[in-house]
Amino acid sequence: METDHLLNNRQNELYSQIFDKEDANEDDNTVHYEEQDISNVLQNQLGEQFRLSTNSIRQMQNEEINPKALGGISIRKSQRNVDRGSDAPPGVSINVQDSPDKQKLKVQNLFGKARTGSKSRDSVRSGENLEGQVRKQKTEREFENRCLRLLKIEDWQSLDELASKYLEETHGTTFKGLFYLGVSLYKQGDYENAIRAFQKAEEINSDDAQLQYNLGLAYFKLEQYNQCVDHLKKCTKLDESHIYAYNNLAFLFNMHQFYSETIQVCGQAKMNNPTNHNCHRHWAFALFKKGEFAKAIKKIKKGVQKNPIDPENWIIWGLILRTVGNYVSAKHKFKKALKLDKENETAKEELSIVDRIIELDKQIPLEAVPSLKRNNPKKGIIKDGLGGESGCARQCHYKNCSIF
Image 1 (cartoon, rainbow, N blue to C red):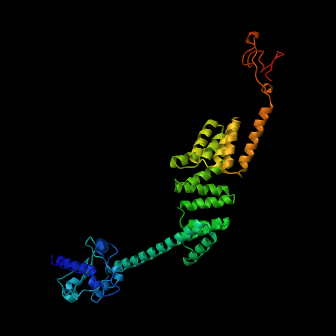
Image 2: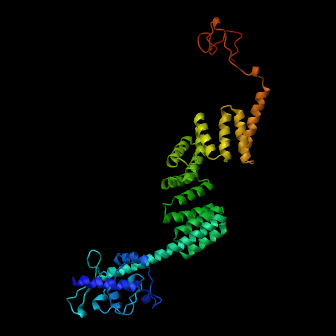
Image 3: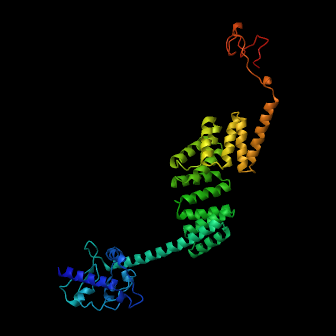
């Protein structure tokens, strides 16, 4: 009971020192606290990182407690502390049965178990390491903000210089430095070195979805499509909401005529991003190539509704309509694409084809178009002309037959 009383007195004394502004102003190194930070201070004192070593306890006899032992908190010793037992800080128990020269100070944790001095020193080291990590994170955030500003104005040369300088300062061991160096090299057209930078960053953190996406783009520029597909797939596994990775995968599969794979990828994009995926155009093209025209038109209509200013959507729609023979509507779609992009060569070529077809239809009279004329059934000829002994598909015995 006496020990608890002494500890409570010491806690009150220590708290009064921390929040006494007059005592705090006596030394510039003294930390000032506000009342709103009381709970934080208490948590620090009771937390695992706040532990005093034996050397720190001895230093409490001096004018000022060692700041490092208290995790950077400097507390000036108050003149009001006259009781010898009150020199013990919170978390330290005093055996009052021994003489003053043989007082045993034991550092205890929240569970009342003794903590050795070596663990206290480890705690101090971990606090210093934590401060170093905080400084490192702050420096990295400042670096990344500068990189984002350069990205916004598309100053790739300055981004290259900034990333290279940051890598020199950090001995080439930072993910962000290698990442933005790769971005700057990619934007400057140096795709091989961009891949090298991205690969170095991948050795540090391979679970970054945007890094995998950038690697896919760089490999695409070098026409190494297998590696491109692999990294884009990794990107979709790490980030299922990465709509651009799905879109590029669908484009690659269509380019290599893997239409079933395109349909599968587009289905995954819709499942993971039902409202904002942008695979309608590739999805419609794959369905069109597989002969599913009705489904293809349905998909491309959704694509146009979502993005009506994309000329490629109108071109795909016109291509489907031209294939099914609706030349007038196809012509309208190609014209719409040219309004959005006057230099679109595909739209120009398709419009020229449709115009020639329409002109050819005008020149050929309707009577000259081959047609199937059904003979009088009373003469013993089957209506469809495909069956029976005298069917035209086998042998025609009638002089006036005009199937061909």
